[in-house]
Length: 439
Image (cartoon, rainbow, N blue to C red):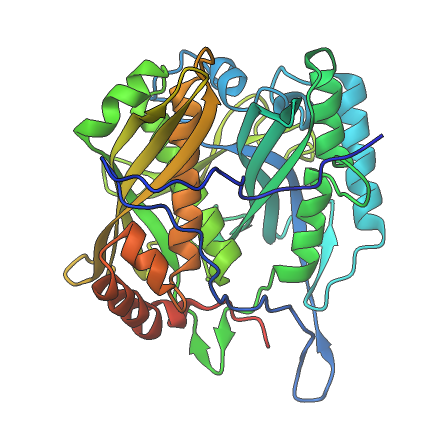
């Protein structure tokens, strides 16, 4: 049996578009190498370790004041398969809950970290705690060399917070992508396999990836070279008028898409640049931002209120990011009697400022164009590719923050001006947000 290897990004048909867009360029950018935690010692040479408490798997993004009639409706729309695996309220079963609990305890049995130990029991001291949060489950199908292929893009984050104050201390976003052959009769089985075991040989599951990420990248050291580490985060999302028709046609609310766009951007920012991240949350009437989490069945009894959404307070980022989704465009650029070529594009403005928004450090417009070569008779959902173009754009912008690629800046933005401004942004602001983990 043959397996498809994990992917990202998809390889699209290269095409020079002269009518509506400039050419689409694939970039190879230099990125900061990941740093890893290491043991901390006191003046006597003794290792310093603290205990943090695991509060389970959760889902993020639910807005009780949003367009969904209930939490159950929101879960059905945003986490179709994962809801049963992490046992969100009313969605799991005794067998799935037991499997998740056994998996969690087994994964932590031999867990070692140089900075902290993990406890599965919450003490009365109300200490630091963390959750494994699933932000988005995105599935699509595609025909590749005559085979129907299932494509999965999952995003999540490890959230460390102060239990007493419910204050977010750190967020570590992650991205997980895979593909395998598609059989609609086996979809539930395939998704369970993806979460627990992964697809194909030498793969790991999405849940296992959380543990690997915790071990390799999570640090509780918030100072480096005696300096406090600044944090960056998406603070505001604006959906402009030209983007609304595509959302409406796909029956997607603006508030839900804001949440997904922010989470995607932060996930790729963490993946590509190793920066200290503040998670995204909607502001309340007082301007305070909160992250809503829905606990799954692995949350320990008494830690969170069952069957409800819980709120964590989000600190203000030192360098807030504002994203403006300016629009989408679908254009047929070539056609013969047999096939056709369709271009899908998304347009995004990216702005970074100081904490009180009195100084703008960077602001520029970006675009991403994907081309699809298909039979004339073939019909597809435009939204799938419009949405995917914006996802790839988030990935490419965050890759080019450090040592931006000249060709990419020329084709996707405003050339040398964009490159100079990105270099300045990284050198003077974002470099102060580098993860505090030792080299």
